[in-house]
Amino acid sequence: MSVGQDREELSGRGGTDRCAVSEPGDLDRPGMPSGADAWDAPSGEWLAAAPGPNPLVATSAEAGAIAGTEAEAGPAADALPAPADPEPGKRRVPGPHSRRGAVDPVKTLLHRHRELCERAVDPLEIAAGLEAHGLTDRTAARFRHRDVFSLAEELYARVPRDGDPRQEPEPLPAPRVRTGWVLLTVLPGALGAATVTALRLTDGHTRLLVALGGVLGAALATRAALRHGPLADRSGTPSWRTASAARAWTLWLLGYALLGDGLLHAVLTGGPDTAPTGTPDGPWPTATAPVLALLLACAPAAWCAHLLTAGARRRLAGSRGLEDFSSAAKPLLLGTFALFLGALTTLLLLCGTTLREPVPYPRSVALGALLLLARLLTVHRHRHAPVLALGAAAAVEAAALALPTAARLPGCAFLATPVETLVNAGGPAAVPALACGTAALALLLHAVRALTQASAHAPAGAPE
Image (cartoon, rainbow, N blue to C red; front, side, top):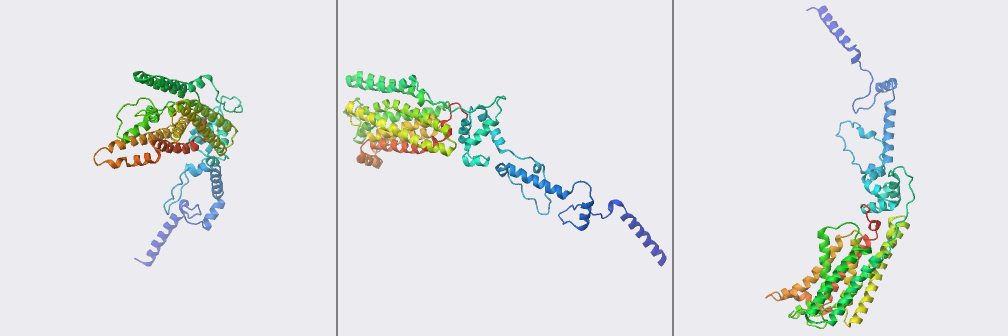
């Protein structure tokens, strides 16, 4: 092949290449970078000549909009999980959530507690319900409110109410003193006094029948007093297991207060050899004065519960924060509790003087305090802790009777050592005093925290 032919072939190929490069779609024009490389000079020229909105300006606007959205969302945006970091070398593609509008955290809270807000008759019910769900003043600050009461007022205002103008909420009505429950609280003590008088005037089988009739009548009267008035539980029907357990432990504690000290003394001395005769000086003595004082104390307990409820509602209406209400409710609770202890001590003194019986004050006061605190917690929607405290006290008393009995078995004499040591130090009454006193102290600490919350004093029927 000649040199001329080679030149022609080379020129033909060059022409073909030039034609291929001259196609408009394959020109190396400046354009938007498609990767993570930096902008070059041709890309900047294309950006200046491209029609439509400037991508840099649009990107800055979108970033500002997203920042504004996050600022408006506030704490609600903090609660959302952060997106995972993209893999190295890959671009982050903006998703649909990056252009959402601002999130209203109060609206989300309203949707979550819609039933509570719709059924509430004033903001106080909403505040109590929110506190029952664990919201505090610090949590309310995340919703741009200084406290839970302020947040409850906004939730109450946002709930649609058929276009009617919203009226200013009225304070919660104070509980009324009704003649019915006043008489019912006096009935257990009256029946107990009549039974004790009849026992002093009878003997033999007649005394046994009188005792059985008096116990049954006092039990029914106490049940009626607990179903009406300030001591009634209106927060809903408790479970059968919880109600049965609380009733069983209470009956055991009262029965031990009547017969337990005499039975424990008989067990430690090798008995009992005979059945109880119902007299305080028999081989198995019975303590009628403490039980009669506890039956008479139903009336002071009801009045103390009434004072606690009325005072708590007044303080709830005048408080502007959970801390304010808690600070005002603690002295009220402790003062009411001290008032009942004073009334019970006075009744114990009167019953002991009238019946001429020695009264174990520590044991009786501890039992009365335990029963009152358990009932107050039950009335104010706290049922679990009272059952545990009553059951623990009853278990200690039962163990004090069972251990000396089991110590009679060969090689088990050591089982009676703890009970004998305690009885030698403080007498048979030291066992129930220790059991009921410890349980009452635990319930008191729990009540100071539970009964000083606004949710514990919400009106009956308010959703929790």
